Image (tube, rainbow, N blue to C red; front, side, top):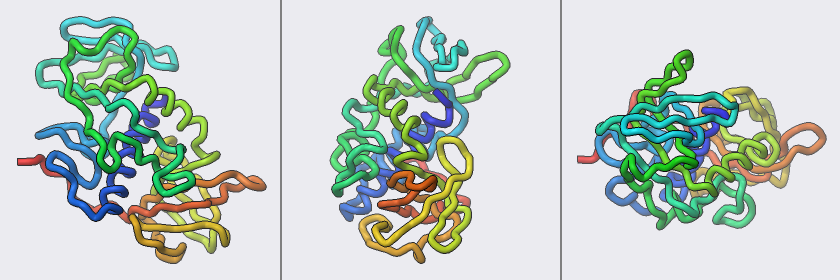
Length: 259
């Protein structure tokens, strides 16, 4: 599985969490913020705080100070961890992107995890991770030595792994997400979060647009905005049915640690 895919999956969950928090008009609980859950100083940002490099794979060996994992491309990586490595388990039942949303039709997947009323990632111990589990290790990655000095390790639920695979298969077919780079009439071009490649979609009279809970139009979308698009490929081009706009990221800002 592509490294970027795991990052994209977590980003979409954070995106969904932010949207549902805005929709409800509520203030995120302590320990959360509008970009997803954050677990204390240096904690896991759900796509915001730790978007550095990472490797994802199935555990083949567990040792006192490292895991050995095998990626879906067959590469073997050693994940080094210590007492300072933060360990998390993503809640089961979290619905991934491309599924039925909370507002009828296909949405961002509110689910029972990062969505409204859901549970944040659970902090676990290194001993809770077993052979056969699938993890994502985040930190300093040496692709030549095939090693990761893990700052954070995320244990994924098997259902989430299945969702990621489905997510990858459906990307560009039923959904898109990325940063808008150009708008030409009813055609919008973006840089995809999964593959960092250009994609485009077109809007028609049946396309609906929203920013958080407010309806908008195509004219309200600006270059630099991050959008999530659901739709289908028709006559060789991706035609959007729904477009959710989260606006442009703030420049020079980073999530602060809770006090």
